[in-house]
Image (cartoon, rainbow, N blue to C red; front, side):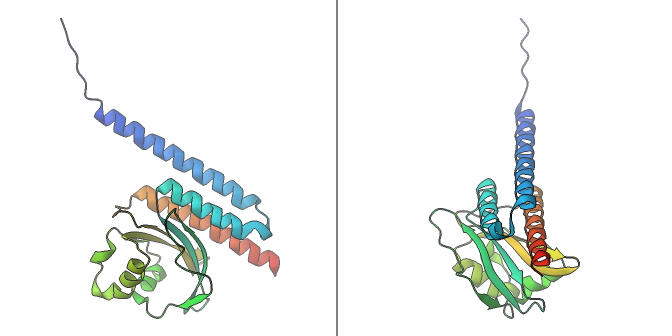
Length: 193
């Protein structure tokens, strides 16, 4: 009697990773189509829908798109999705960026910011730590959004339920969806002028 045993763990892991990548590609394709066909009047609603789709796919508690003033002195608190049981953190309007020098400098350098555990941020990022903890977040990732070479804003995703280790796939998805959103907003600006 011959018995053959194989450890299928690595195969299962590979299958799961492939399924996730296919699902991620489907999200990108679906949202890309929606942003290329949306009417200007429905763009704000479509951005909110995309933030919700992104948050649900990535299993996040918050997603938001923020747009900077041309001189990078303020941020427009315009688009946000908060998961069930979480209130939106902003109610519109603009806010000064003067106290958020640490994150602004990183975004100016086109760095993606990934914070797995907000409570461990250095004193240099104390203002950001206070802001994100006030929002109830434990982890956050921010992808800079550019129009040409100009920093126009960022797309962020946050976790309030648990500390999160950000993956390359997470960053890719934030960047891709953010680029779609900023391109649609830029298209709207050109068509309105």
